[in-house]
Length: 178
Picture 1 (tube, rainbow, N blue to C red):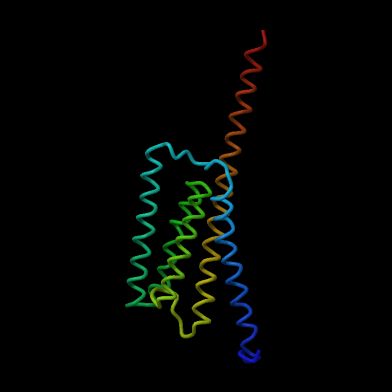
Picture 2 (cartoon, rainbow, N blue to C red; picture 1 turned 45 degrees about the horizontal axis):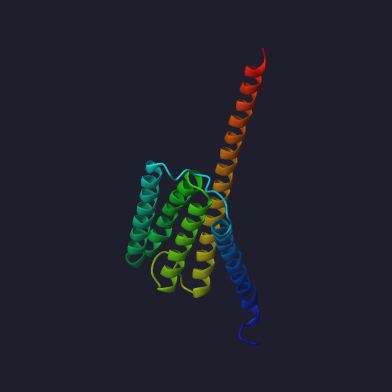
C-alpha cells in the first residue's frame, strides 16, 4: 500500500486489467485449440497447404524483422508499420484452422512482448505505462481480429459441409424414387 500516488491508481488498474484481458484472449483459445481432441478444419494433407503455411510464417517473420529493425532507427515509422502484421494474421484466420490461427496470434504476441521487454521495436514510449498500454491494445486487437475471422471461416466451412450432405441426401432420395 502507498506505492502508487492516488492519481496513478486508475491508470495502473487499467494497465493490469488490459494485460489480463489480452492474456486471456491469446492463451485461452490457444490452449483450447491445442489441448482438445478434434480435427483441424483445414486439410493439411494437401502439399500446397504446407507451402502456404511456410509462406505465411516467412512473411510474418520478415515483416517483424523489418519493423523491429526500423524501431531502433525510426520509432515513429515502426509504430505505423507494426500494423503491417495484421494482414498476415488475417491470412491465418481466413485460410487455416484454429490451431494455426492461435499459434500465429501467440507468436505475434510473444515477439511483440519480447521486443518491448528488450526495449526494441515500435512499442517504446516515454513511460513504461504508455508502452504497456499500447502493446496490450495491439495484442488484444490482433487476437480479436484473428479469432473472429477464424470463427467466420469455420462457420462458412461447416455450412458448406452441411450443404453437401443435404445435397447428397436429396440426390439419394431422388434416385430411390421409381
